[in-house]
Amino acid sequence: MSLSKQDFWLEQFQAWQASKLSIKSFCQSLSLNYDQFNYWRRKFLVQSAEGTSLTPGFAKVAPDVDSICADGQLVMQLPNGIRLSGLHLGNVDTVVALLRALP
Image 1: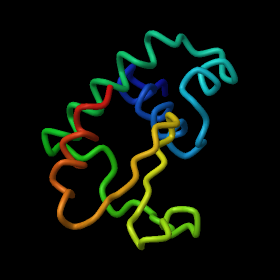
Image 2: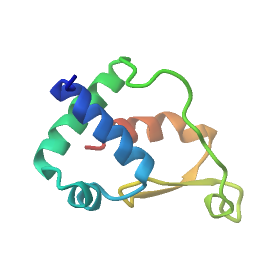
Image 3: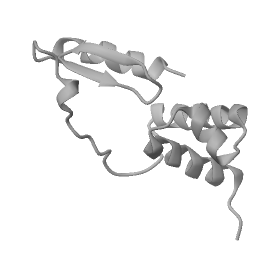
């Protein structure tokens, strides 16, 4: 039985998230169309932002020594290479808004 387009791209999106590769490298490694991948990725991110869960459950988060600055603040390294530093309880809402605005 073949997958629907949405199911196929959801599997690719989830595999990309687990791969820690850039989107370009991931698409090249599997001969996927980069533009189609981004189209579906945006759809899944919108669904996620609207509260429609892509995968129920919890996301694994592991502390990394490099993620803590000398002053005790957190640093977040996103899969696309963007690095956010100076994270603390006082700016969590701003960080969440920034993450939701990312393409």
